[in-house]
Image 1 (cartoon, rainbow, N blue to C red):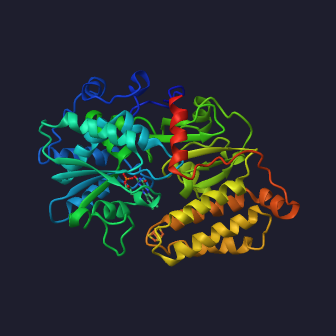
Image 2: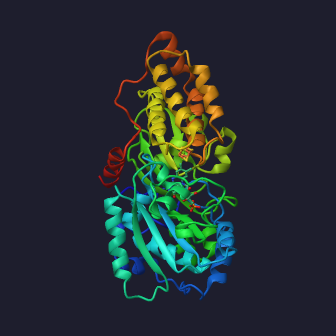
Image 3: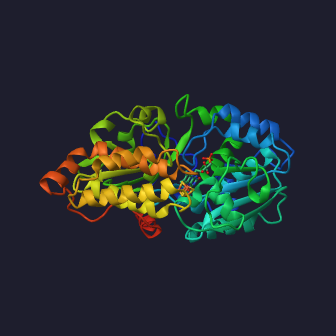
Length: 435
Ligand SMILES: Cc1cc2nc3c(=O)[nH]c(=O)nc-3n(C[C@H](O)[C@H](O)[C@H](O)COP(=O)(O)O)c2cc1C
Ligand code: SF4
């Protein structure tokens, strides 16, 4: 396990205790390290107090969009009917391992956070949705839940396996899978907070968000806000990979300079041409643009970028950004849930255009740019928007590589493919963390 603890701007919270012991899987170890929850998190006991804490903390959801957690909780509380909490532990993004690491190393923190969620919305049921391929995480969570059996939790909590795939982590797709469907985003304007798991008002929060809530319930809002920035408080988990000394999952305060994160990972092992920030629905940045960049949405906004699920990849200069982008674009096209025309045909056309580009055929370059604009906002979910903005950023950042492919018929890439496009490659990132 690789954990960042060097720069002063950083404080380990979610991952604290894990570096020393390898994990905090048992309930006793978890309580010995984090201490007990002082607030009674059984539904109906301290729901208003917890809601106030979360509002004051300014916590944004850690699944990607940083949507204010307090606002989502208010929305669920305003509905009629007994609510359900769904913890999104799918993490289908191949370049991201942060939820996998958290679930495997600190499952009780996620469970505590799920209980805090249930208390705030008065839920009688918690469902943790996890991908079929995430066996070690499933085993760790199942064991942790078994340990809690017999304790008065005040709520029924269970684990459910969902299909593997990029889109199944989208909240309506996850609910669809949990309701027995194929795991595709459902159509229509009704959102899970209104009608979700088996028709109940449903609070969906990412696993890391839940773990943050477990710590906020223990230490309070001021403690939470004591690191990070005023607008983006707290720490985040980041999956760092590519040309760095120690690829792995790191916990950093939001606003930590990217250079400090890289230094803690042993620095870049070779010249880097670009950084991918935010994974496959994220943005490529030219390495020169990252001088002085801090890991925050505020710093990324001028580039049209965002932290997303915080997968950061350092692309070595010996890798071809065009070929890497084409492979990921094909993967994203293949991951389409296959139910919206612009997503199905648009992403496929973009991927095909990029594949031609890699072969030196630039005849569709203008079309690719146009298709990237055309698919935005045209799908039932934001899968095509994210994939298109990822490709659009590549066209900007890798302009000279594209020129070389098309005009000089040359490729800068001299090494094997880097970006993972399957869960098998995902496992490789984890191996590197443990090494
Ligand atoms: C294509 C797509 C894939 C997503 N995959 C995940 C995922 O794997 N895990 C996750 O927590 N959120 C994922 N999300 C975001 C969820 O829809 C949802 O916003 C999130 O689970 C809410 O939790 P949070 O508010 O705690 O971040 C995805 C969104 C999209 C559009
Ligand atoms: S936009 Fe794409 S991934 Fe999203 S629901 Fe439609 S077909 Fe599926």
